[in-house]
Image (cartoon, rainbow, N blue to C red; front, side, top):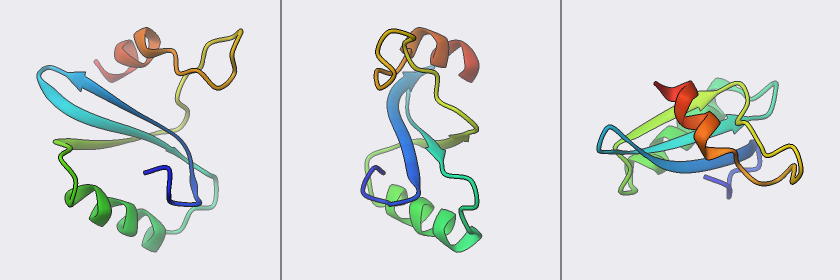
Amino acid sequence: AMSHPFVRRAALMIVRGKRVLVVEVERGTSASEIESLDASVCLSDVDELRRVKEIPVDRRHNAKVDYPRLARMLR
């Protein structure tokens, strides 16, 4: 997912036994770009793709995903 230039952040999690890829895309991302992301994910071993407005990050390390908070968002 991170190979797409419009993907800002991505995180892979297990949610209720499913492999879920969560992506945060840049504002202004076109529908065709989203479709290309969907198509590439279909070829991977991911059960579900979820797009969110923002993936939460650790306050101390702005690049580290806050997985507990992200899990709460996905429930």
